[in-house]
Image (cartoon, rainbow, N blue to C red):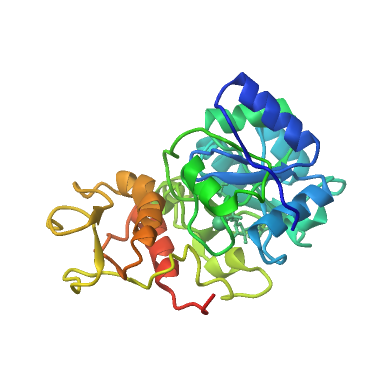
Length: 321
Ligand code: TXA
Ligand code: MG
């Protein structure tokens, strides 16, 4: 991995122009999206995409999401079923990623799709992400801007803490409003399958489909090695879940009323949208305390599904690093 000087770019037209220039030259720029910060590179440039994997220490079999400015850009890269068209019409731009069959002559680096014949596409809603995509004028491959396996970034400071010296710039757009990654829906087969719970709720998708999408989380995490990445979003300290009476040494993280003794709180009122927006910031903060972490229960509906998915991975036993 080559050493780079990491600049912080301001959220204005000069910052966007500088970011677009770096991307055109094959560099790496972390950009704000409404979900989490992404680590972007030109999705058509093999060297640039390879540099994403190097900067994150990401396993090469794990494919990347391609970010686009307009739905016509998505239709040029992949084939849309009527179901996929309906999803895009309802939820784009926004926190939904669609996995679709790739068209011939797509021009993407094969590293982006890890050799699969499908591609994950998303139109982010964040105004800075959209402006940068327009200024750059092409597809941007972007995983979350954190070292592989660690906590996702929801601020420019989180990105700097994990990747300074490994990337060229961060476009500083302040905190991310949604706070958990996009929902991934596989629309490449006959029936849509939910590969990852995220910022678009399963209930919202089911309301549009007329029934709940089948769940197939193994496929999103590691299409060629199911289960390999079950430890993820990992703070350094151990994490316990569904804890109502924490041990004295534990840093207790509350949710909702009745968590008066909590050191940190996802949402004091029990609001899942607020909890999702706070989740990764609180995991980053908890990580800095170097104490075992205990989370109060979070209900498993709406954005609670995405929150619990991240918490289960954060709590998963992992090899010593
Ligand atoms: O909100 C988000 O989705 C953020 C922001 C930056 O857009 N991005 C993000 O990317 O979370 P990443 O790389 O952390 O997660 C991408 C997920 C991985 O689990 C990967 O396996 C899956 O998408 N994926 C990508 N292409 C796929 C494909 N063709 N088939 C199945 N899963 C795929
Ligand atoms: Mg990630």
